[in-house]
Length: 272
Image (cartoon, rainbow, N blue to C red):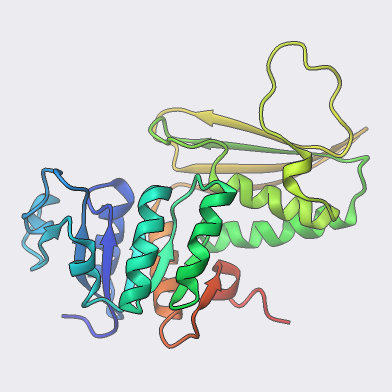
């Protein structure tokens, strides 16, 4: 067994769940202690390694999250907002670092996470990759440097099974652009155009979502003015980048004071 903190993965059967499990098992800095799935799932009661089509890993998939969280020093959670809110309360009880890669939250659901962060470390990000978080910083800086003569459009593409749009990453980039402009995103976001929409509203931040095939994740932030365009782009070709980032966050959170953090904290980009 590897040294380091024990980690429980929620949504174990999903694409990200399985990638997280493989990433943890390959790591020498952490080890897997729990795997959670929804009640009634076919994996319940099975060894997670065998359920994934491989050798036994000594961890049985359960629908009892409290039981699975008890031995863990960290929980990595890429599920759905309602489930994540419930998991946040249990992670706080266990005093486990809660790494949240779930997207699609409403503002009210984000507010519902706050009480748990008073008792445990909570790291939430719309995207866990180093590249995207650097892109977020660049987006804010460019938006601050350019005035409203430059229209801002965010275009994202994902696989055909993704259930939320715009993506959490696109919204994270939109928030960065809005912060750079000194405005609230919910006042300037244009998240849907159809039919006769009229001219583009000056100062708005537009979003467009593409869904198809097995696209892991592509994001463009476009600053368009008369005669020129600036395009900031990130392409993810392997979701392992998100799993590695989530594991980094779980390790970073060990020994930290309770609170709500993001990947910029984990990467040291919020300092100074």
